[in-house]
Length: 286
Length: 258
Image (cartoon, rainbow over all chains, first blue to last red; front, side):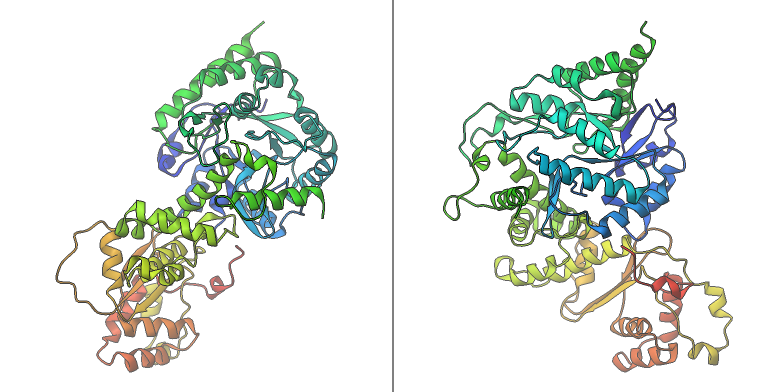
């Protein structure tokens, strides 16, 4: 693996100074580029300063690779300018859509996995890679719905995207856990089948149990859901799946992802140390 | 239309569907998990608006603001993926919904929150060298055209003390009961990387309007004193120079690539 990138942290504005001063070996930071697509000002200056001391990853959330439309050239150009400015070590996006007919729906919305949607995703991934002159990593989604339109298994679908576009994958282990719970699948089986050779990055995050919302407006019954909320510390089950992956396939650049209810920087560093211990044990195993 | 396009259309329709009635929704929207997407999309939009309008939040309280935002969000979907841009016309929306809040000054206070965001994210450009301007002979100075910095914004509000209301709530200061209920102007700049604000008279705003229109300093001064005859021009000009109002390089005023 890239020796510069071991375990990284999601960079939040409240941690800028600590992030700037942090010196842990192999530490890197990840940001959503959409938050830095501004003409100038202190936000970009902060990011430039962090970049001058640490490797950076751009984790895009809005290119909408899964929409049945060509990528927005202006949005792609904006991302390219940031890539040129920051020279990130990693660039990633999601197997999802979020823009449609000129409107932005700020979430990672699901696509039916069909041969037609595969063609569209591959085309969009290729356009993105061509524009950025580098391979990108595609993240596996969190699932909350059973879609009868799926004709492809997700692992096969991701494998086909990799084979046809030459992209890499971002394995979000919390998404695997959340989706497996919500859809009644086996998370360990998903991890074991994941195309490990293509994994450029791993995400670890916390989730929330939605059992408190039993009286939701839909009135629909069913087991409680897990939500990929990124507002909690990483759950023990997710740590175990992480250990399973790195023991089987080796360590990868790993991100501690936290987007809400941001704790003290030290708390994130403690989670980072835990991830490092797991990766280190896997590296030194016979 | 492809089946994937139809899926997007159905999904979006279901995201914004309210209650029963109306067109039938796709089967997947009846699953409990669909609410996760519905809630996330609406909450993210409301959170973004609330974050973009912190002074309105403080003035009317979070619960009420989120109700107003919820109504806005249902009418206006984001079109820009940069959520800092979301709600650029929120002040106009507040104007249209004034019957609900009966706070006539609220839209203009929202305009100052928006102004702050614009100044905060405007292009970087060094300020003009104050000493260099000071060394220009008075006659030559009168014919000089200065370029307004891309991060300078100003506005005169004729009806209410908008700047004082905004500033008091933005700085979380004490409200002074002796505020005169009259028009006020504001100037925001970013001279040293951080957004700064100050009061600006009607003449100062007219002066800056004229400068932004590309006229000479003499003609800008004339515009300023026409509207505010008592304006102390020298003092005002010195203050604008040191506030970071003018750019060193006019090329900075080219349209932003973003």
